[in-house]
Length: 458
Image 1 (cartoon, rainbow, N blue to C red):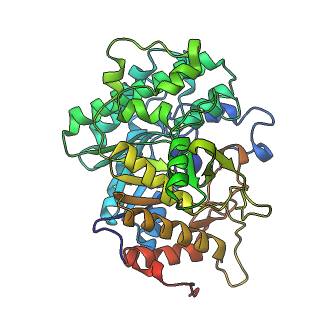
Image 2 (image 1 turned 30 degrees about the vertical axis):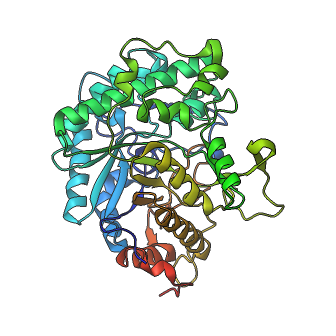
């Protein structure tokens, strides 16, 4: 059985993780450029200064994307490459790069999907208060307008923000990611509110320029809870757990998605956060709650739940020795079925999996190829579960594999290889992995080939 007609088969990347050219052609510094200079921040003292050198090699890279057969490519724009100070003067060379990239993709028959923000916040704006400043949504709106004015005649699909749970929670609240701050809960929640306002204002900009042509979404982390069985009680317990806020962290679904899709903060979170809740001014929720076209979500794994006494959710631990990826993420294909289904049921919009994939221990073999059977098996299992979500009745519009090529994996540096394309960082040579060729078959068959088992490397 194939996936629906017109299904998006893509792969994804982000600007800081692949572009390199960190100080070239007028680009300003991002918080990640600065964070990578801090001792002990990044494994091996590495950075995204060069990364995959995609800035200079994008033409050859797009040719490889075409060879895989991708019908869409999701990439992010570097805010400080467009506006070196974050606001004000526009860097023409930065815009020109994305202009050329979009044209190259379209010439290859690949639809561009643009993410406006994937963590590389302008350092100059951080010094002015960053996401903690109430003006930050307007700074983001100014940036969005510059990009949309330039690219929207050719770009149809837009994503405002990628994984705010990470860049606010890990970056501001816990200090693990750039900019490396550890602010109070009240400040993290204030930043989160500004992020949501920035999303809403960016959507307004895209709509004002494109009207109904654009397809717009949002890409949070999918904090997935899945049932241990298909009993009605376990399914309901997993659903309850997935849309609850159990602790005073920002690692949840509803504090981010409910304002955007339902127009209100969830009551349990409002009560839990108590005096730390943000200052919500008149008109804020209307700004945040803009009509969207799809629910984008990044899903890698989940948490098992069963119905306890009175049907209340109980977390079930994984068995000893459970399968894990090289990044120690648990392998849980069912997360893609239940996460997708539950998000569709709650928010009522077509779901696009904007990230899913695994880090593997990959190298070039003696035959010159990269054999990664674990990634093939992983992706095969996850896509079969995504197909089950569709058979359950969920409306699913697409799937983007993370990532299109090996890249700079944030604080892990270059240790983790998530790509369909192997990158030798010394020579910058690219090699299609076996998984890329397997994915080509999946795309060509619109998912029908998933019913086969095994893969014979060419």
